[in-house]
Length: 337
Image (cartoon, rainbow, N blue to C red; front, top):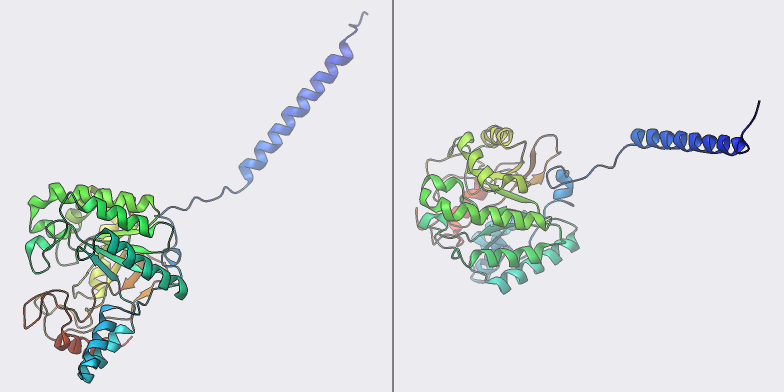
């Protein structure tokens, strides 16, 4: 029998090739078995990370400033009421009273204070064109000005822990001024996309449990970019019980791919009193807090600044101004929690 002179070399090459294949198979099996790192998105992040450290308490809130003014003018009883409200974390409202430079400064001051506290501030952006459809809280920027303002806000928030409540009533109120949709929805969609790209968790307007049907609200949220947002908010500046809001929000969440949500309980301590504008007999809701994360409800907040007027109704001053009599009602009838 004749053997090729290179037979041993061939055998060695075959052996080496077989070993290499075996090594690749082992590595592939190990890779498949090893747990893959989870990619955290704005939707999947835990609510305790979204509101890291809990809720920020602003030292110069509307209530705190009112307390100082009232005390200085000798109105000690009204000052005491304002001081009690000032002890509770409340969202910070940013509207067209702040130009681009001023809004950045306002944000930076509160971000710095929140960092010292180790908490997360919530900012309310309230400057959409034809805000409140021209009612008591009328105002807002023009459609040309609004995107630049949003860019300024986004630039100030980028890289910091904060959450944003984007334009209360803006989507729910389209039931009252449907003609605004053509301008408003694209502006909101662009705003949420920009903020979310900067990794700022955003909540969009979903009205409240007694306003817009869940299917209609879900459709508006989809058009406004809910897929880019953390979720939506309900009951801002309204009075409905938490159970009503959770039931409604659960339906809207199910219709929007399981979106998270927050609920304003600042003035729902005694429920609906027949009118939205400075009703008598209202009370502060339960203390705001981050939830345990067992549902899509991220946090129970005080978004509306309790004690501020809804407008010139029932003896109130202009919208957003401190209303001592109303503040006293809220504190007197507050929920004990």
